Image 1 (spheres, rainbow, N blue to C red):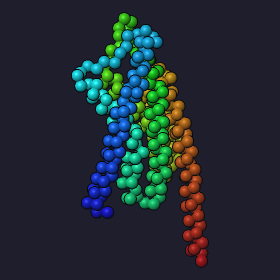
Image 2: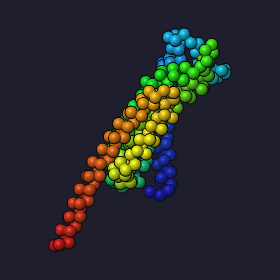
Image 3: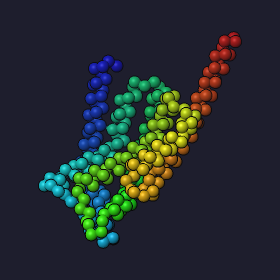
Image 4: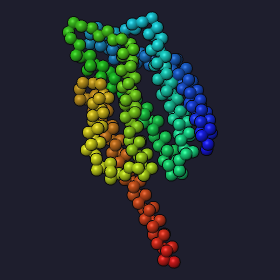
Amino acid sequence: MALKEHLKEFRNRLFKAAIAVVLGTVGGFFLYMPVFNELTRPVRELSEDQGRLATINFDGVATSFDQMIQVSVFIGLLISSPFWLYQLWAFITPGLKSKERRAALGLLPAAVPLFLAGVYLAWLILPNAVGVLTDFTPEGAANVITASVYLAFVLRLLLAFGIAFLIPVVMVGLNLLGLLSGKTIVKYWRITVFIICLFAAMAAPGGDALSMFYLAAPLLVLFAVAVGLCFINDKRRARRSAAREAAVEAEADR
C-alpha cells in the first residue's frame, strides 16, 4: 500500500476505535455510581469497621464532574477493549507475513481476557492495599483523601495489573515471530523472576508482602506457561526445519 493508503486506513481504524471508546464511555456514565461506590468502599470500611475517620473529599466545584468523566472513560476503555484491540490488529496485519499474521491472530483472544483478569485481581486486592497503607496514619489523625488523588491511585493500580498480565503474551508473540527462543528465556530465568518480583513490589502498593504475592504469584505462573508454550513452538519449528532440510537433500540426491 502507498503511504496515502496507509494513512487513510489508519484514519478509518482510529475512527472506528474512537467510536467504540465513546460508546463504551456512554455506558460508563451509567455504571459510574456503582463502580465509584465499589472503588471507594475500602475507605468507607475504615470508618465503618475500624472506627477510623476516613473519607473521600472533593476539593473543587467541578472536581466531582471531572472524576466522573475520568472514571467513565476508563470504564469505556475496558468495555470496548476487544473492539479497539481488533482495530489495532486489523491495521497491523496487512503488513505482516502469513506466519506473523497467524501469530497476531492467535494472541489477540488471549490478550483481552488476560488484561481483564489482571484488572480484576487488582480490584480484589484494593481493600487490602488501602488498609495497609492507611495503617501508617498517626493515632488521632484522619484520612481525608482527595478524590482525584485516590481515583488516580486506584486506576494506576488497575492498569498496572492489567498490563503486567500481558507480559507472557508478548513473550509468546516474540517466540512465534522467531525473535525469542525458549532456551533464551530459561537462560535468563533468574533475571526474569527478579524483574517480575520487583515489578510486583512496585505495582502492588501495599506495604506488606501479601500484596506483592497477589501479583507476583499469577505472573510467575503465567511466565511458566509462556515458557512451556515457547518450548513447544521451538520443537515444532525445529521439526519443520528438519523436514525441509531432508526434503532439500532428497531433491538434491535425485
